[in-house]
Structures are given as C-alpha cells and as structure tokens.
Image (tube, rainbow, N blue to C red; front, side):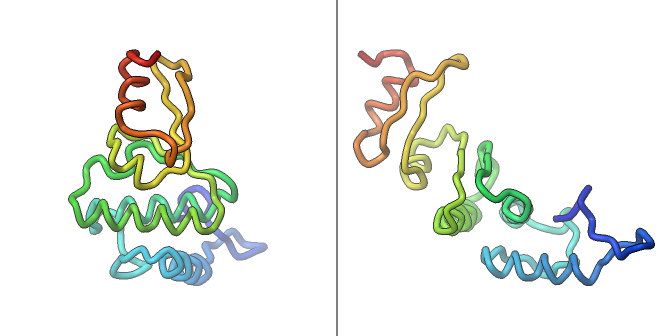
Length: 145
C-alpha cells in the first residue's frame, strides 16, 4: 500500500514498518478486503485480493476521486462480487468513482450516472435510473438519435 510513499522514522530515514502494518490492517478491515495478513506479498494473493489491495491503496491516498479501469476484467464470479462490494463501500464514503467498463450489467449495478465516450468524444451522460441498456448501446454504437 505504501510503495513510493513509505512512512519513515525521523530524523533517520528508516522505514516505520509498524505504522505501515497498522494502517494496512485498519484499511483492509474497514473496506473488508480479505487478505491473509498485512505482511502478505502481492504475488501470493488471488486476482480479487490483488484488486482489493489496489483499491485499498487508492482509497488510502485519494480523498475525492478514484479511477478504476476494468476493475473486474480478469476475475471470477466470486472475486468480482467481492470487488463490487468494496466499490459499494467506497460510494458510502462519498468518494467519487469513475469506472471504465465494457460490462453493461456491472455499470448498471454500480453507477449513479453513465457517461458514454466514443473515439474520445463524450456522446452523452445519463442517470442510470432513467435509462436502459438499449439507449446506452445505441450511444456506444452511434445509433442514437
């Protein structure tokens, strides 16, 4: 979680491992990210756990906005549900979340608003509760009126 932003003990720049472990444990508990230990290495975690740690890292440093690019693209069903649960908990903390996704089902489950871009141009923004998949697909494909 602290790569490039490690806490140190002053005045000697020694890593403050206890503080980093304590903050990691608190953050993963708060977000309900299920990892074996705060001392676990990323390479030992599953895809869903890795994504949970990445989101936890982002939330630790971001206070207003998090950008997630295909957050569940390579995950199984259970891991996807876990990551979506973490995303929902971020919404409850009033953190704005931009999710880039090709999964319309996921977009409709997680979003309040949907913004469609095509070839780098904003085509439109819709409130999720006031639109449907047909309208969004039409915007994506260029068939909207």
